[in-house]
Amino acid sequence: MTATLIVGALAAPTAGAQSRHDRDDEARGATIAAARAAKAGIDWQDCPADWGLEKPIKCGWVTVPVDYARPNGKTIKIAVDRIGATGTPAEKQGALLYNPGGPGGSGLRFPRRVTTNNKIWANAAKAYDFVGFDPRGVGHSAPISCVDPTDFVKGPKLDPVPDSEADKLAQRKLAAAYAKGCAEKSGDMLPFMTTRNTVRDLDVIRAALGEKKLNFVGVSYGTYLGAVYGTMYPDHVRRMVVDSVVNPAKSNIWYQANLEQDIAFEGRLKDWMTWVAQHDDTFHLGKTLAEVQQQWVTLRAAAKKAPLGGKVGPAELINFFQSAPYYDSSWIPVAEAWSAYAQGDPQPLIDGAAPDLTDTAGNIASENGNAVYTAVECADAPWPTSWKKWDRDNSRLHEQNPFMTWANAWMNLPCATWSGPRQQPTQVKTGKGLPPVLIVQSERDAATPYAGAVELHKRFKGSRLITEKGAGSHGVTNLVNSCINPKVEAYLLTGKVDSQDVTCEPHATPKP
Image (cartoon, rainbow, N blue to C red; front, side):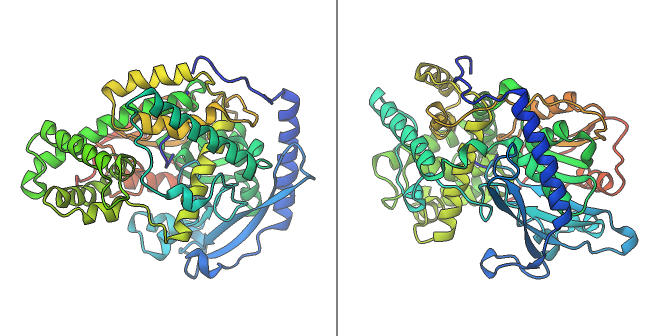
């Protein structure tokens, strides 16, 4: 989950809900596709210049069926990249695949952890080729789209927090139009944009790499890919690290997950605002949480009345500010831009929050990421079709959790009118041959609340949970923490986990 994630009792009919026969056909198709990929291998070449991947990273393609029930039908190419292990031949342990989340995130930057000398990963890089990929529909892998990318990023957008029924109706129309746009622009791919198909693609990539078993690091939505892969292919797993975990319970995918996220975002926003108050000598935004919160209310009202620089309204502010509850690395830059605004200089806030209409590549990536996010979440599970349910749930939640609730609701509302088939979510469980899985989670994560890690830990027998106490940054394994980093490294190098679950002290809080 990179975009905000994720709905309830009055579920949409599961049009095209799968029979066991369909799933058997898909399983057979996946076996055929993997065998073909193993035979074909990957023709590694220098990466295209516009992919932004420096030498010695190499790029290639893996062919997969669009529909695994028809392995001889239409195919697409999945973009992959790799950097070779840096160690001696005796140290090498195969390929380590990575997914950063989404749905809709690209993993192609993973090999750059080697070229940019990321010290946290240096010892793992001796043992493994680092392999990234664009999942189906993403980036260079048969990308899908729902609207014009430039229109998608234009601001200011409507204020997500409705003042009236008319405001709600306007947002409902936008969501329905977005769903319709997805069907018109990418309808052929939509029925096959599911987590299970991405998992099958992952297994085909494993085969193409010549690997008997998968070594995998998944972050955010990547943990759900890992959970479903571990369920579908338990005996194909060698090592698996899941970091910042999506709650895999069927009842959570995906409507409920978004509601849970709204609560967690509110809590983590308060953590950050409390920190801002503690550094009032630097930021001058208030000495208490209440004072800082009032500054946010004031800023939001000002942007609603007259968008900053003509481009930044409440929607753009939420988008910019949400990076602080997401990642501690954003605490200082967001606070500095806000502080400058409060001191009379709005430009840093405008520069940070306004859409860049000249950034063609970035706008295409942004629209494509949102299209994939929507397509996968809508196809993965039933969603409520009753507007009354959405309205009731989000109105109730907004009262105590006003920061993200309505913005998140509108982002996911296209799933209420989605025209494509929906699956039932996967029943995640321990399959025969699944080795110990390492689960890493911060206690106050906003995007994937802590309960998700506990739930997956229960479902994957023999797994180990490392908890980062009191911390809340999303994506723990790439942060410096002298308790967590060696444990992740030891697991990747030896397969060993601690004899029991571990609680680690938090990584260092940012200092202005």
